[in-house]
Image (cartoon, rainbow, N blue to C red; front, side):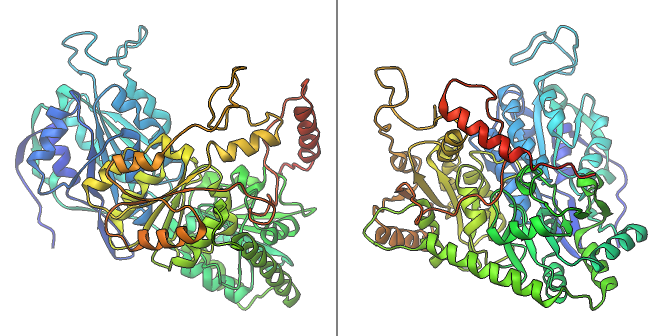
Length: 629
């Protein structure tokens, strides 16, 4: 029985906010978690005397993590939220000015991926004692604009607390959005530094324990009937599973539904791993970075059931993938905006609820045996291509990037978690990696944000202590954001960092070559006498950099060395880096080529033959694009 608190409590706005956050909980299906499990912070004049003082005063109630970069703190919070199934989030506090604007990239990533994070940037004085104050953005036409307004378009909820009593409705609304499965993302409460320190008599009930139940919306009966009719009449149905399956905790429901109906399941980047790689109906990745079997099934499917996917251009191959003369798309999604994409039959509902209702109404329906045989054989052929890419003919050779993944594949078990976000690794991982558990594959590709991996791994380690967590990065990504290595060392977290040194932006270099830009500005090379970037490779030692930040660094040179180093890192209880220079892949040791197109417009006119040729190839592909009407 809950106790109704009465009376008032005199606290500053910052103290009241911290105390309020410590009493919030989220619950789904009886699984209850503290909603704001911890706060990250970098302190400056805009938050040190307010939120900073409050965190000290309430240190027993609100755990605190010291960050080094504001964007990275948001990434760590996002990693934590994803690992906990969106049942728990972190708050991030910064000063006003550059600390606040550094949040924007992380906020966009959280909102794009529907992952909850609470942002608490300081703000300029509400009372305006001087104008301008330090780090104030002056806008001649609007006196109430600050740099925090940059966070409005990347937040799912935004408020500026200019009076103490305004905190009460704003804080409650923030918690509602954080726990709404259809609306969650970055939530921003901008806190003027003078208001943070102002005292107020708060209703004691504001600080009572409060549980926010995460709903599971059921499908509309009319929408459900239309979806069942479409699936029941399909000869070549295909399921495309997105991140919404994971957010809903619908993996078991999907596995049972696929097994009993025989419908094959392809996955987006966010959905990969919702079925283990050896599930009979799992046909792997779909889209531009997809497998041959999944993309063939997509091209020939008469009905496509999307579950929890936003239908990005990588998934649809920029509108060229679904090639059936009259494909029918059914979209099961908790977000109505996404459920209506591709002119689909919408099924607006929680993924698990929708799958279970479809399953119940389809009854004993099963696809034809020849269709099962077709995709089973296709899956076996693709597995043989993966084996070829992973093959190591010479243990004394320097590994290619795909061979690094192949060696790691031999060492992990279902407890390992792999984190990546950008470069050429997401494509290789999506096509090749054999997921063993529902949360092993953690590739952030909604925003594909370079620098996500290391801080996100810290957030995952905090949410899943005792599990091996790998941050896989290329040299370009590493240079974007290595600072949270210091945090891993400070927190004594056994981060396993793999840095692949390939001397530049490998992914964009390949794309540059494909579109006629000739890899310009993508290799890490010294300037040549003619001013171009064609000199020797830059003499970088990123392993030494990681060591200077406190990591133990292993430096394998051969595949045999790599096998030993990765095993050492996996067993390590301290932050450990494996720094390996990779060999350029050939047609045997590299990944299979893209099985579907991706629209990157090429110059319509050019004097360079490479661009002219690339435009001809572009014009050939673009004719296959279709509008779903």
